[in-house]
Length: 373
Image (cartoon, rainbow, N blue to C red; front, side, top):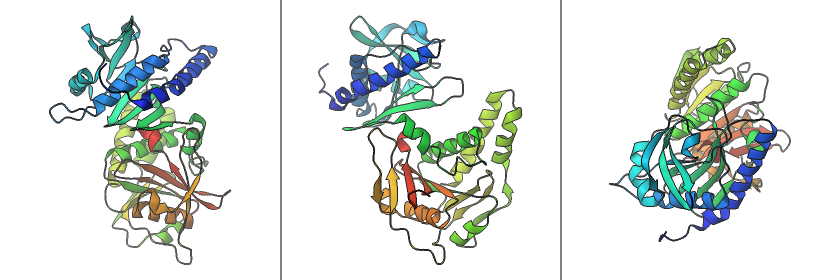
């Protein structure tokens, strides 16, 4: 190909290949069937380079958003197959992108002898299938499906320009389950709902804050300016009801669709100026809340910021360095209300979960946007 090299593709490919090879061997040991093939280093580098240069192109002003799945056509379920594979290059990817921009549709890519080609489109992909998604110009996410019809994708690495973030899968499990989420009031479906809330808050693009407070305590009111502009009375409990009902559900699809609708409804409220207040029993108390420092409590000066990436270390930063006044007020709220936690989305897509760290005696800011792409 005549285009210049993309150094990050060359640097990331060996690490990504090692991840998929390890997961594949682990799957075989567990007796998993129908695992997707592991892409070799050259395939990974080629796909990343093609997707990166495509992300910088425009077709009639359109910014391409593409998802590539490395899989032979004979392993796909009900694919749309082209009579002749298309060449894997930025021009082709940019032109075909509008046809596959909807979520859940992937372009199937495979290598025939020494040539890579786009052979069609896929909707259903096997476990551990290498997926490369173009999120924005110069922003790529490598992921794979974790198995199961309603299972989420697992992010493996994020590439943005010359930055490579290989996610630490062990750290991500901890960071997506902060201390408050691990309390007895939260079960697996509670956590799923909170993660969907995070994704939905990030997706609307307006930025926003969501405060999760103990249902059995009123102390959080001391950190809010009253009256709250949009107090909900009685508390809105449809999300709570859905989570309680999940144990008796036999048909998961309608339940999942209703959960998604309810999550999007609540997440949409975070676009309004101020914070949404939700109890740890998933009941909506209001939105548009203005946060104030609790009387007699010190202003927050530093937070401990971590990110779930391989080799990441904790940094002590002022909360405004994470994104401005929205982050500062959330950090202050959590410092003053240590049995609560806060989810904050920035307009630029950054996402932070704030919780109090008993061990470090400081507010812990989990930067998790790399996990939500």
